Length: 392
Image (tube, rainbow, N blue to C red; front, side, top):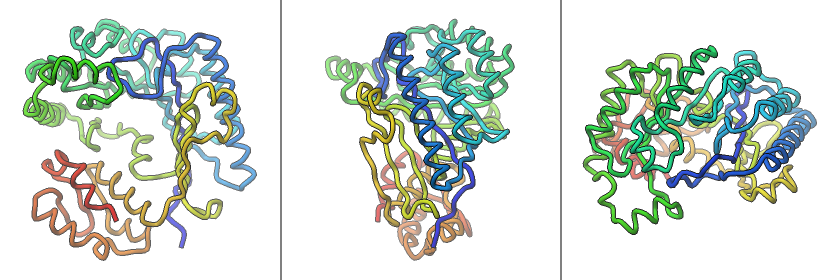
């Protein structure tokens, strides 16, 4: 039995460079000089071209429906390097005419020339990392931009013709108050972006912020009750403003859900290019088993050998795929379809998870109708605990 395969893939391209690393960031990113950026783009293009050639040799589908430039700060690259990357992608793969192409940007790194280049190369969606419209909160996060610089970038993007813009906002920032966060939300809504990603700050071990919290004590962070209150405010204020919550941390006006991220949660094929980028290729005529692999996290190592240089590679078992389907599917507000589950895995949902779902429904953690089940507000609050019960 072969699994349900989408006809097109997504591509993720990792740009690991930034002007200065934020104190909370544990992503694979760091400042770099122009020579390193040049070498990196050369290596990236080699990896992309090799993947396209391999797909052609295997008779694999090379249709691409979404492209996402993440980082780091992709908008740090000069326009000519961005053009080279897009040229490599279009030369190696067949990019759909209506493909969603997203570039993550940081305020202060956008210019009119870059925005014009993005438009010319087919970019139709921007994701701007604001995090907070409060300059004191930005300083507390180690961000190097101001709200005024964000506004300049945002309005420049609108003038350049971008009509699909996401803004990132963060809650539970050091010294943040509930009233301050509410003010932040309302300020962002006034700009009327098409999409808002709203995240609670996670203090990751190994970051400067973690060390700061260890030294100063957790009192510099909002309390757990305040964090929950901010969470509830996000849902109410954005919903009242016409933003549909379609995933735990993502809100969009109708028709502006991020197609690329939806492909992750729906487990369609995607290819990751660049240092630390991950890929998923589903079971098909080309691949006897689904496999997930991640490129090396070592930039020097990647520059020497960008092709097939994986730090991790895993052939997914049938049970692995079922678990992933549950974990990722329950992140979406539309939840899980039992019929789709059966079509995908050839097994009844109720046969595997019926008792667990019944118990969680009685606990008020999920809701069910004839076909679908999805997390309740309480279930979302403790989603990690809920999802852990679906481990086989």
